[in-house]
Image 1 (cartoon, rainbow over the protein chains, first blue to last red):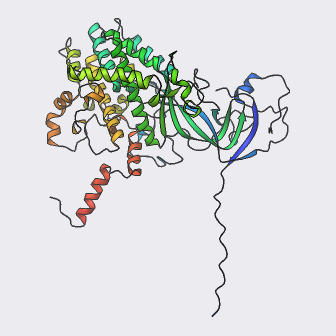
Image 2: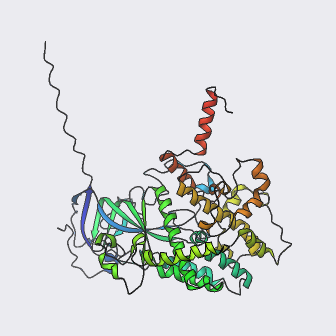
Image 3: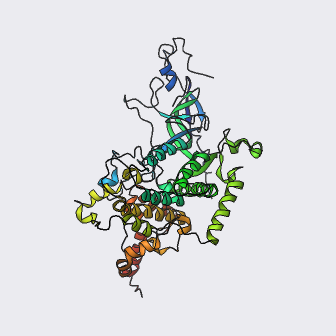
Length: 31
Length: 475
């Protein structure tokens, strides 16, 4: 299979699933 | 944006051929450019009917797991599956570096354009393989090797049955639409990559090739042109069904595409770029010539045959006719006369017409046919299983008569063979079961069934055992 002259070297990286960063739980109010 | 410097040295054809970076012009390490997800490209894999994506299918074929093992190896149907040539990362044959290396020729090759290259060993068009193989096969179908009666018997069976014609297809190119991941060396026409994952498969054919093969057979048994078109169309439908179903087992979609060299392609312009993929190969199911016109001829012929009660060739009668000159022939029971079950298994790989026509053969047509019919019926049975997505029926006789689909009559042949044994014990597996003949692909199919939550024999058995343990009695 002839693929010709090289042009560029690439790295295909999967996009990480952007999950909403878990917010630190609020401190329970002291009764 | 390029990160590879253009080569200023003398042109080196070999280097351009494989997309190799010139080490004289690129002295420093190349930092790869980052792209998200994947790139789309096309490449071919060879497919054989008996072994799937297996590299060779010659008489010297390498033996695989099923020749030495009865139990499934681990990793079957997962990412690291040896039955899938695209599984895992690319490796280099020569050095122990990570593939693809910019300065080496390693990696998974693929090209950018669909059906750009059609000929040669990496060409996308499958009809060259088909034609070459059939040419070889029918070159021996002459007076030197077979007498006139034998020729007619073989031609009749081939001409009428799309199953026989599909079964004899050998080592043809399937084009995969692939997603490239990891490190990729992009070149002018194509890529070398670290990972390749097929998303859809295509078989590209020229309709004239199918017509030509059918015409050759039709002339031997004096068929007219309409019947030839009918045979070719039926064959195309069968190929489409079979490959769609078998590739579903691998987890991929399939599309059959045809090029028809007809100058009156009026509707061609109406098709969108996505349908044609910028090529002359158009999808079989809405092809502007084949679907409206040739399908019509085919339907008229099949309806006429039905009304006139045209008899398709019968396996029993074919066998009897082949025996005609050779009434004293005694069939040896191969299980008794071969050394072991495994020896028989190796013999089973060879029951196709290519081996029958080979110069080394020492058997007559009558000796060859019983084993071939086993192979043929097991293929037919497997196809019915695939289209129904179940393997609950262990015998072709359990289905209603499928003669009109197979293109040959088999009921009488099977009933004679299994009249006593089959009636006595419904659970024994006949020789025509796909488990005997498709040792590589059939276990895949079973796995696929368990994925789609269809009951397999073992599950049913296990279920009834568990229920019995619980104290349930079966009436």
